[in-house]
Length: 338
Image 1 (cartoon, rainbow, N blue to C red):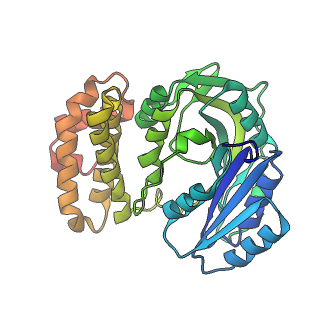
Image 2: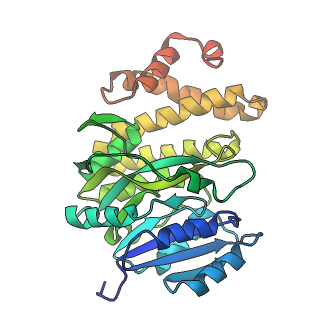
């Protein structure tokens, strides 16, 4: 990669985000990064997203615009990755924002620490029902930190911690590494040859551990970098059959760990256990539970089979251990109602 390449590529997939897109892009423009490109990928939007993307690309020379037929967020991100030229990469969802100036600070930290992946803190903001695109302006971060605190770990440590979903205390701060693509900056080599899996939700879970395993150094910092708009209608808040994709994704992670990364196997199994236990409870609570009879049975069998492994794993969360204990001592007809 030659010196003519921009320092940072910002990839923004867009689908029916007319109310939020301009605010998101302007937040990146004003982020203080001196040398960047912004890649907007319109994934077959049916509202005014295309018009807004074209207007923004005309206004700002750093924007590259790609329009494609609707193929889903994974395909949109892959389209962005295919043309990205930056030495570093980051992702922004088109209905979110970055915190003014702090994205530049995060990039400077990544360079200073020679990190392969660096994760900043994020601030949730509500997504109100009338789609008020300016709601984020009322939640400008006022988070006060006396100094930037950082935590360093290896790639395998980061992969394990993300799968264990652990929140730990260190340096007077609670730390947790998440699977979300946003709020992080990646060295380009971490993504070389990698693509998002198409056709599944939980795509971040499916790929982040692979990125972490490519990293020699991962840094977490308390610097607030990202403003995440909470959507009560998102896949994580509403149960439907697509949520069962997490069972396939975690099964694939466990199989990959068993074949190639034995040091990751306990963490992968713990994450799969958590997914099966959560989906087991949600399916049993669904008014359409009869449609999920096979899935319910398969999840219950996995829970029962691995409950003792979870209880004996010192790194497993209390939540998982509680579920494992209940699965051992309670019959299925009682467990399904808890």
